Image 1 (tube, rainbow, N blue to C red):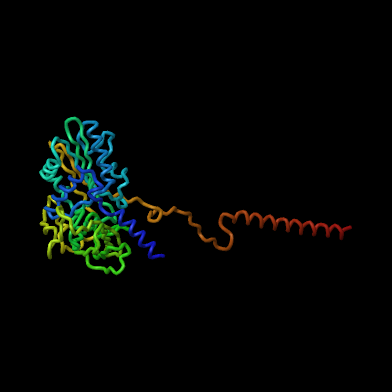
Image 2 (image 1 turned 90 degrees about the horizontal axis):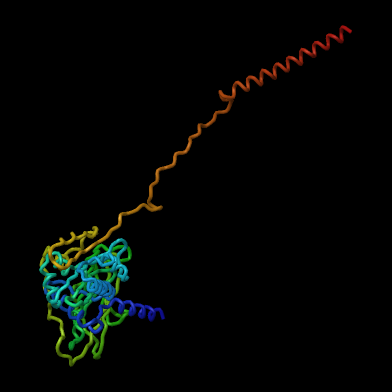
Length: 380
C-alpha cells in the first residue's frame, strides 16, 4: 500500500512538473517557442520549457500594451514584471526571484522579434542565459501592430527534462533524455536543490530497479516496446542529498515520419558551448567544477536606447533583519547592592546612642528616687 501511495504521488508530481507539449500551446506561441529554442540550441544552450503561469503574466501584459498603445515592461497600472510574475503564482526561492522579460511591438512575425533580441547585446544575453529555464509568451494585436511579451523565469526544485529535445513523436525506441542543471542558485537553499550530481531514470514513477548514475547533460534511454505515449521520470540529487523530480513524455510510433529527432550516435545533441560574455553560456560547459556557494550576482540593468523593447533580469536578496533568536540587545543596567556588615551603621548611630543615654538616665532617676524614699522612712 505504501509503495502504491508513493507511486501515485510521484506520478502526480512529475506530471505537474513536465514541460507542456505542443498540442497544449496556441499555434502562434508554439511556433515562437520552437524558433526560440532553435536559436538557443544553435548557441549551445538547453531549450526552455513552457510555463503556463509565465504565459499568463506575459499574455496579460501584451493585451495591456495593445489596449493602451504603449511598449514598456511597466504596465499601465504601474505593475512591474516581477509583480505580474508573483501575482501569477510563479514560485521563487526565499528572498530570491529570478526572472526576465522582453517586450516588442511591430508588424512582422516572430523572426523579427528574434532579430531584435539577438541584435541587442543585453537582450541576447538574456535570450541565451542558462540561469533561465522556463518561458511564457504573450501575443496581442491592435489595428497596426503585434505586441509580444517574452517572460522568462526559474523556480526552485524545477529542472526541466526533454526527450529528444522536446519532440512530440519518435519512430525509434532509442531516445535521448536532455537534462538541465541548477544554474540559477547553484549552491541550493534550504529545501531547494543545488547543482545536481547524480540521477536515476525510469519509465516507472516508483523508479523500481533504477540505479543512481552521475549527472550528464544527455542520457540515452530505451523506451518500452509497445507503441503509444511513454513518460520518462527523472529523479535528481545534489551534493547535500536534496532531491527533485521531473518528467517528459513522447509518442512512440514506429511508422511515424517527418519531425522525428533520433539520438545522435555517440554524441551530444548540443554543440559544445564556447565562453561568451554576452550570452552567459560559459556556466553550461560540461566538466566545470561545481561553483562555490556564493550569492547569485545581479546582472546590470539594460541601457534604455532607441530600441522599442526592453529586457531586465532582477535578483532580490532582502537585507537581513534582526530576529528574537539572533538580536543582541544591550543589557539593562541594574542597581548593585553592597553587602551589609553586621553592627550599627553610621546613619543609625545617633539614634542608638540617644536611646541608650535615655535608658541610662531613666535608670539613674529610678535609683535616686529609691534612695530618697529609704532615707525618709528611717528619719520617720
